[in-house]
Length: 119
Image 1 (spheres, one colour):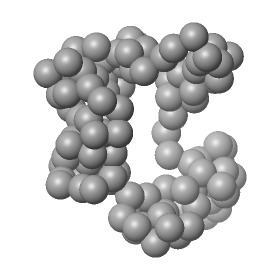
Image 2: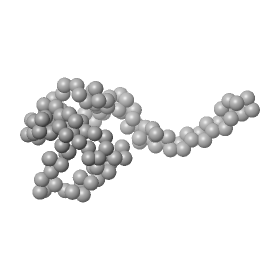
Image 3: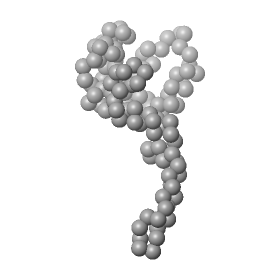
Image 4: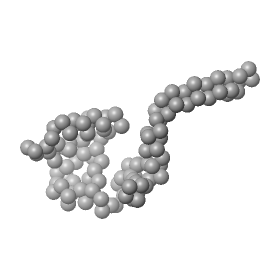
């Protein structure tokens, strides 16, 4: 996957690459570089881009869910429980719908779920 959108190559008679053309998504590549640096340039804070780094102690509210629907909660940190009012044992195994109420904008939730499913 990555950021490559199209790749063309030509091999010469000695089986070496004579021509290589790669067309890529520059913005996606920039995002991957930002994640690789593990620093959010807008806040200058580390970006958790692995499970290990997401599980590190943090004052920021963090939640880890399964990667596919229904996105069940697997881990929450203390900052998240303080922010949301749900203890870890009340959250683990549930979905983020526990945070939804009558004023939740369902179309926004669907948009976020679509984005999560497509990376």
